[in-house]
Amino acid sequence: MHLVSRIAVFACLIPASLGAQTARKWEVRGDTSGAPRGCSAKAGLDGIESWFAAVSKDDSAALARVTPPRFVFSTGRFSPTDPFFVAHSISELASYARQRAKHREQLVLKAITFNNWRGDGLEFGPVYFMRSADDLGPSPRPGIGKGEYRCKQGVTVLNLAPRPAWDDGRSDMRPPRRTH
Image 1: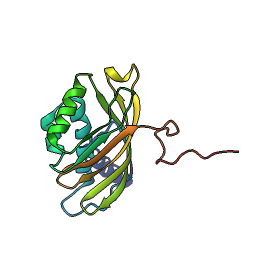
Image 2: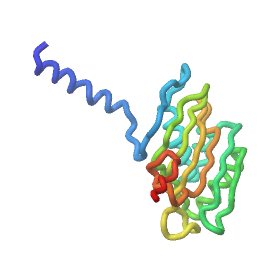
Image 3: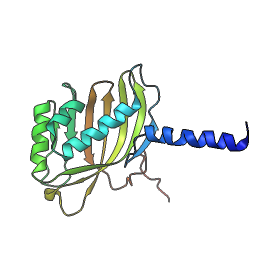
Image 4: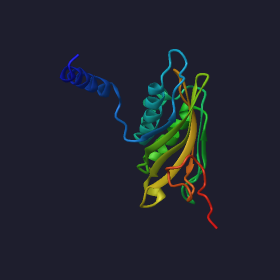
């Protein structure tokens, strides 16, 4: 095949493959390979992204779509007045999102490191995000978390907390080396 023809064929393939990808505003790290039959890493990525968006928009219907009946969600204290919170039911989670919406809470994903599939679960952590709300102060607060997405179910575990000062959001949870 002539070189120009090969280039033309290759150029025609690029838009099709790029168009099939979802443009994300956050970084995907780690390994999402090894999905069980009928599952995909894309569904996991979409589910996690949808969960963060649903909380930020106080969208209980969207939360119910990406959170199965059996799950755990927790968040640590991002300020002295911010309570520790744990939810095990959609009604608790929806109530939390409703309360946080009063403070115009926003959770913005920055990066997620995936740690492979284990059975039907795609484990992830650290997940880096920024949390902002009227009652948390004037600047967004960096957060960190971990969780699991279950195939065809949704986000089954999500634990969030303030990011430690030593973690710049680019590491995989390893403290910086000490130099003497």
